[in-house]
Length: 553
Image (cartoon, helix red, strand yellow):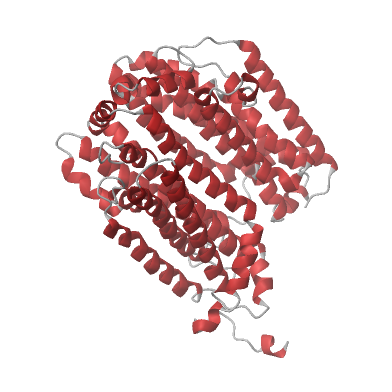
């Protein structure tokens, strides 16, 4: 105790190897805490990569069908902006085009969540202060979090390579694609480590790291779109400013440029070194960027749980709405040319028709994209609902409930935000898709309301999926995070794989999105939408009833 009392205040300088003492034990503890979450992340990304390679082998069997697809993609800036440049005409090259950028982004997200959880989030919750009172070095938590992310990306790369090789793609290109995705994840693990030093909240650190990831994707999109636009090829250098662009410039199955992999690896080492330097230059619990002080008294607009929920969620809502607007615009910009983009592959057209539930290819494509945008919006709604659990476990709910606010008003405030916010996100998706498609095809005044309605038709299904997380939060709070995201994963797998794999209809009916009208072009039936809304209300009511009766915390 005397040694603790005599310890100098303020930030401690780096202490060399001793500052890493205990990092191995913390990494093993982190792996045990996250064993389910890590397995889920790695499984989803691996399945995304491998299933795409497997399906493309069946969809584009002939060289002529692949060449037609490549010609359509490389002359359309919209498709290039979505997934990056396309190199080569092999099945492997098409696979790398389809999942290379997406896999890199999702691997980056995985790394961000892992590192922030085991650094800033644990520090904010007070766990690192408890751990730091033992024989643990100053940099141990940072090293453990980064090491865990590195291990996850290595496992991801190995499994992706093995899966691609098993389905029959060339091993050299499979290794290049797997390493391109994994190396991007490594770099964003280091970015998250720096973000954890800048902000004193886990939420702020995640926002910083995700903004960097979004900027990297936008740079890649701009450079790739420029490469396919007439007179704009000079902007192609933007690809080299983006870590996501680096993953595309490895060119798996089209030359396998191994030296490009040195860029993300070197950048990850430098950024991680910066994070290690910064961790010793701040106080425990503090961030290098001080929070902006608020007013001494809250305004009248913050005197209810709903107003507080809006204040906390508005930035996230704006970000989600802007993101799906841009994504919807990119999807809508290629709808008019979807036939030429799919080429002569009858199986590819059949897959789109099955997903969209219609015979008209353009409307089937748009309906299928509306379903995907609905799944994305369900992810937003679940994230809002799960803030109830994070507020409870971090003890932020107690000060709110210590006032005149009841549990019902506190819980209902987030439910209102999830419901209203998801409607806004869907409207943004429909607006972006309708504007882009209407401007390309002509008749924006007709297509905007048409696709706006198609997007909003997904709302009951979004609410039904989010209501599962609400019910679990009230009745079984320990399982609400895993259960909520599992419900979304099952709905996504059922919606995307059920029609193409021709699963039995009762299995497909498990997903709420199966019961949504296939719009635009389909027939609207009120009964399924009413049943979905009723299920959502019943699950939400059960969750609120459970919240009213159980202990908080």
